[in-house]
Length: 242
Image 1 (cartoon, rainbow, N blue to C red):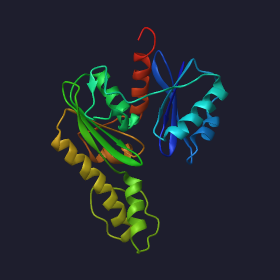
Image 2: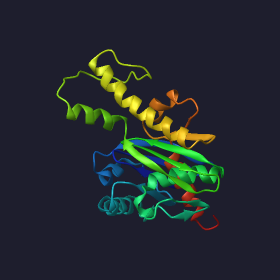
Image 3: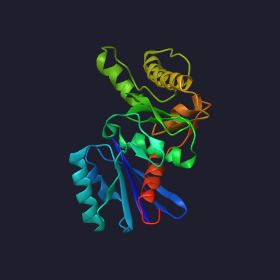
């Protein structure tokens, strides 16, 4: 059994994977200290641990030590690669592309070689396009839905109540709805423009806010565990026997 960990900016997604693929996915908020939050993982010892971490090198050391102490196993940390399994990055410095973005692309490319666009909707909203040859064409990083809301509220003086989560593709009719809709439409607009600019049969969205955005993107499919899927693909590519 493989323990897969997707350590993001605000939470950890954990899953166990066997011959049948990914199972038993759970999410743990880490409040800026992922190493401590790892103590909430089940005690059952895995055979292998694979980690996608976007919280930085200092946290990585603490995460590795915490997993070693809990399970007696040194985890394998996925690293963004310039070329892997036919997928080639546009970045001149591949290490500067977030491993979560890379793993989402790797998951889709290994699943079916062909053009696609993929978005990650979390603290940040990201998008990457890949052509039919496996060449990464580039992408964007923007504020995610919650980050948009925080930015507007932090930079203005008007008061608001509970913003709620009643999103639509329309206009607001009170201050709260207008702030909410502004953030929502900004995210939708960025993704719609990217898909028009880089058309592909597969447009996929993942991340915590994917379920909020995908219903208003009818040509897109939702894959909430895509980073974990890419992490599993990377693990299997690098294991004996492939």
